[in-house]
Image: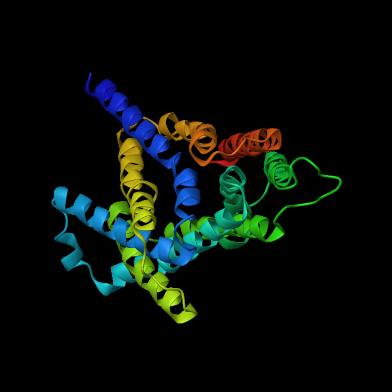
Length: 299
């Protein structure tokens, strides 16, 4: 009975996380109407620090930060350069140049990018089904970026496409290197965002980007920091811990891109292009094939 209750709670927490993540693309695009990417990432990261500190306080674990040695904390602090600093600066710049529907769909190729990077960085071998997964996912990204005109190969923003694809490399590197970090996930994220906020603020000031926000921009950044960067990760981690198997909850993530398109259409006002739907279908098909390949090559 307790296991069944825990599984229901896991589904509820997982679905809540997916629904919140589905609003991120819309929040990025609307906030960009009021803030440049640099101050947006700074204020969102700072908000996330506050939110995660409150989560640790509610859990009665804030004292654990005082007992952390430099040796255990330094890796999490270094990883803050990748996420949130570099990852979100690159990703939100891509959102600034692309339609929200395009940037969010291309971003879902990160799982395939991580598989490719695992070959040189983790010594993993690539096998038959993985070639198919890579082909499907990157074909989907090209369909989206060219609006289906693969032969003409014309893109509205090649720079935006390059940044969106580059963000998947940064995100994949963050998770690959994060495997070596044995800190509790919430503590690790808190340290990531503490250092990421400092890195982002320093970069913005050195590059001459003012950090002073207007009210709509600040509210948008606070929303992103709370529901894209902060509390949603805690919900997701809790769901995975309560679930009987990781797959039962992780499969909910496939709802996110379609919910996101729905929200983008009604709140941002973008007409959802057929090429986006086709390309996203290819990307998700590639992700599913990658999961099948992982099961075949697993222990």
